[in-house]
Length: 73
Image (tube, rainbow, N blue to C red; front, side, top):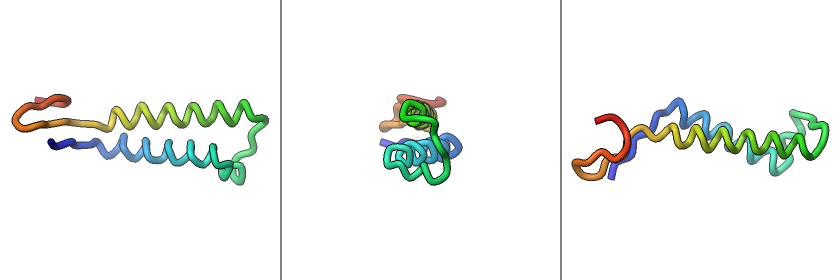
């Protein structure tokens, strides 16, 4: 099984998950001041959603044996 990744989307996914993790652990409060807990929760949800979408988009090709399951033929 061979999986190839598109590095552009993978780097965006890693950065988005890092920002989401910083929001949960409240270390991002050193850099950003939120108006309330709802704003911080919304910021976390947006960062996590962007991370998930770009993580899925980063999968370029999945190949098992001679068959290509996902990607260009």
